[in-house]
Every structure is written in C-alpha cells, then in structure tokens.
Length: 136
Image (cartoon, rainbow, N blue to C red; front, side, top):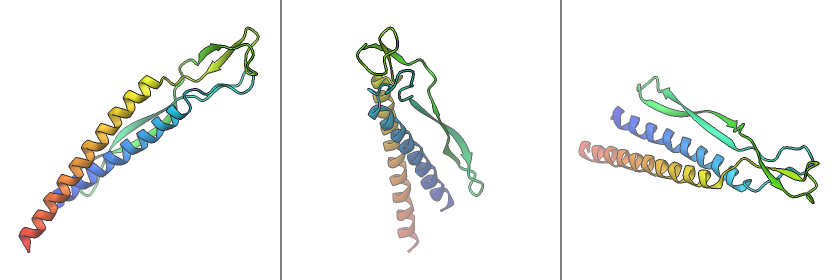
C-alpha cells in the first residue's frame, strides 16, 4: 500500500511543478509585446523556472520541486520607433526578450508532462481502490 501512496505523491509533485511552469510561461506570453515605457527603462524580462530532485524521507521516492524562478538575461530586441516615448537618441525602443514560438513549445511540453503525471496519478488511484476492494 505504501508504494501506491508513493505513486500518488510522485505524480502530484510532477503536476505541481508543471503547473508552476505553465504559470510562468503564461506570464511570459502575456508580456511578449511589452516595451519600455520611458527612455532607458527596461521592458518585461522573460522568466525561467528550474526544478530540483527532492527525496521523500518517509518513502524514499524521488519527487520534483521548484528550485527557483529567474529572469532570462539575454539581450532585449531593438525595435525602430522614433515616435515612441521610450525611444533612445537614434530611435530604437527596447522590446522584451520573450520569443512567443519558444514559449508555445515550452507550454506544449509542460502541458504534455502535466497530462502524463495526471495519468500516472489516476492509475495509482485506481490500483489503490482495486486493492481496497480486494481486501474487503
């Protein structure tokens, strides 16, 4: 019965991690077209999330946890718009460093991983219920 409980906690940790990843991705996509509002001001900087293995002391199961949420330090896009209030002396405005194609690919991967963990959770729950029915 303990191994079935481990299956549920492992899958749940995976769903929590991928849910957090999707949240970060949605923030990036929502700000994909942000520009600096004042000259010299930086626009939205893309967020990244990383994970770390965490071992459950009771069961010895390897779970996943969020290590940290950082900002991508890559260069901002330079957009020529001399009429924009945030334009520099040569007419360029800093655009966000979010690439929508990369974010959508990351979202698809996170969604599939979440779904795989959900399927494992459901399989573990079903196996536990079948065992309880057999014991009755």
